[in-house]
Length: 274
Image (cartoon, rainbow, N blue to C red; front, top):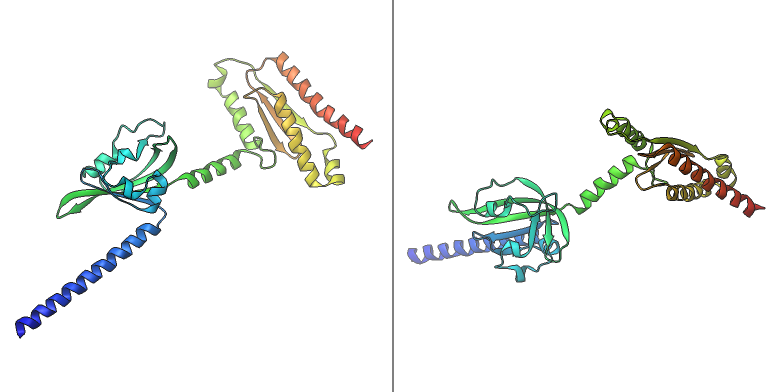
């Protein structure tokens, strides 16, 4: 009887342990399927054993189809210059020669040629002291990089017109006046332009009309400049123009063309009102 009771108790404990293990596995599965980062696991030979939905979205591969394939069948790792990554990060992780927890910024190129910027964290999976596989976590950096690019653009451009702002204009002017740049020779032209009686437009037609007029004028001025010339809004109705490597005669022609463009617009406005 004691033996039967003990056997029954051991079986009950084993079932309880199995149930707890199953619950933990289901909890981990739900977590992996819910997170926004891509998770890929491989065996010791680098063959894929699991991909969560985020990894499927990143690689454009379904987990069931990718299982058993090497990682290279899904995507290529590129460095910042869009060249094949000479440092085989994934191989090092799978073989246990790279310490886990290190984050690396990479670009992955999918089979259709499209690319996406990611941060990659990899660590070997160990069992009984031996490496049995690897886990890779891929975080899509598209939104973060776009946010950084937007912040950078906003710091150097005028929000209304999209032109370079005063800060960026002064920076470009400093670059041209730097001794190292002057040693290369070349002549440059600097112009300042403001719109006569622009305040009258704001006062009589409203700021919305004034903003629209500014955008229209900026587009016209930009069309008169050469590629590489800088047209910047310094504030209000004041603009700065930097013509790099531009002889004086050519600068005079451009200045006259700009003046004529604005004057013609002004005359057309008068004709329309009359």
